[in-house]
Length: 528
Image (tube, rainbow, N blue to C red):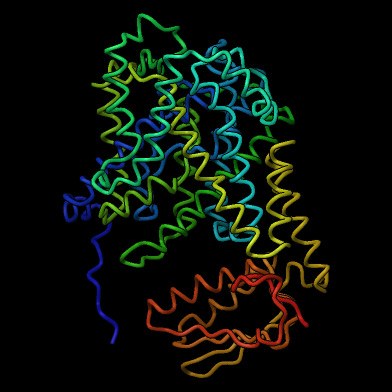
């Protein structure tokens, strides 16, 4: 018999019931969120403090129907889109008359409003349409762009040296960045970068986030070297009068332009997809195996984005790193996210003079590490091992994103995936329509798949599976199918694990009649 687990108390009663665990986890997440929020905002072309504003608002949406363990705030994955929007809107960030920053905020407000509408229309689950290799390629490209943009900051170079350079040009200019380095700041930046990579290997420091270790080193160093008096103004974080800056900052004057709506679409796609994928991932490590309401979480993110954009903040998502830390530190409910926002509020009341001692190079080290995690060699290796088809999709998405833009990159990834579907005999009718039938009795069910099962018709297949979700046993029979892609097999593998946790069985039959594209157990399979 299944062991009963005492589920955490939800809602307002949960604040008191789980105060100790959620309060402590919220504080530990705050230690990670503060420097990252500052760095993400600065790299995006926003005032550094606006990243903290977004994270504070992320804490407020805890009063809505959000995923229980996710942390809301700005994300490194949106840096390139934010900075691109500022340039496209005719500005260069907050340093030059605030024009681009304010116009980008107008875009963010509309993104939030559309997300709210999509949530009411119950479209949150459609995030699963996109092929995983294209999504991973998009994130890897974003990671490479983040690294390229932060190298000159890490070395203390003057901002003019890297202004206007494309990602590829930034990499080719690295020797120039090294030649023109600010030696003092470069040494500090490199030490911070080493700390970011080495700290996770030291088990004794498990409870201290790596960014906080960097701050423990860099703030006293800044005081000892008197960086505020001896270095150019662009070297240190600048907050200024935060509370005076928190006002209506969104500018909608470019609403009639193509660029405005292009970036609304890009933000909407990446922001919603990354946020919902995080919710799905964190549900997978939730010790209580709760199933989040995707549409409820999307609605909360939409409300947060609209408010953050209106006041001058960055776009927010359910962020995976902070959410993982939250879960690992014993958080029980969504109120850990609330407490992390409260601590950020306290920091902006009492700690601004201390925050302004942080060199931007220290924040750059955190962002380079975040970029590395998105574009780690293991990500490329995994795509290769899954199969040549997924590797081609992955690489093309990376290259097109780097050379052109993100929207075109993900479009190329999707189209390439569809070309492989045609190659493996998927009919046009089968592209978006799942073909299959159900056989069932009182306790078990079988779904017999006909044609192809692919990323583009997965939502139809999933809906069919949900119709028999009450059965204790479900068989997916591919004996009559022509082709099963990696995305479907990966999704089924995840669902198989969830079935086991609930004392149910998910069995997959008929794949022994297929040829695998690679040796990977979840590679695509086609009829011999």
